[in-house]
Image 1 (cartoon, rainbow, N blue to C red):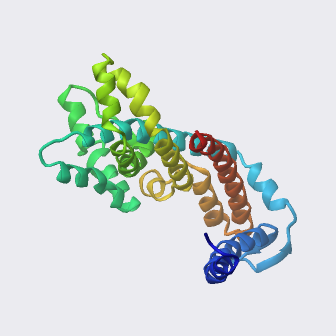
Image 2 (cartoon, rainbow, N blue to C red; image 1 turned 30 degrees about the horizontal axis):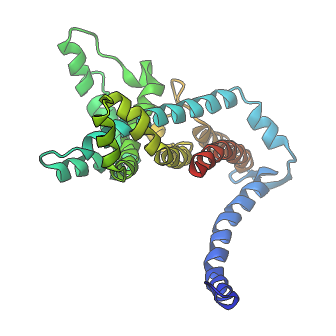
Image 3 (cartoon, one colour; image 1 turned 30 degrees about the vertical axis):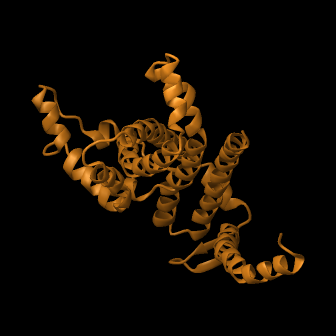
Length: 288
């Protein structure tokens, strides 16, 4: 057992790393809070004094605020749904013995290492282009008019692009979890006459519940801040403006750092509300 002396020594050795981490997190947060209460216009006079809650009022009273929050939640929910459903299916398939299994696994995981800007450009120009895109040729092959994806199904297109990049992450976590499942349980259930669907819903899926909650938590944190895919494809048009993109637009258009910082505070609040909700779910699953 660890003695009081060893625990104290461990705390002392960890202190520099903890201090640097706190500084790394707290300095940007404190600067954001400071600027959110200031009239800071870098191209029009700099710091013009205390603004009170005016920046917060202006940001939340904008007609684009609540639609951007709704779009953010829709994109997060859509990406999570696709990642979890297809991640579970891919994990089950990749767990089965097959020829070239290692190569297949590498190819499935590869999209996760593609930069968001690059993946957005690939989808925009190679797949979703209404004239020369793969999907446009597929539509014409079946005698239908090509769909202008980034205009007619803009939010769904963003969800597809982001899901394509995050699906490998979900698959990797779920594949690791499903490989830890005791095969004797499945064999015993099969001997007892349970069909494949029953074995999946009553044995495999409950076993994956913890891995699913971890995937949901991690992906939500990152997808809430999705930006590059929207910037490259739609530029925030056609109802794809998320809260993160709205903050960018407000700072870019008005050159008002205070207004953008107020939007950043709202984004932090939204992220924490979602995180608290998800942490409760994760905690319940991990306690079971």
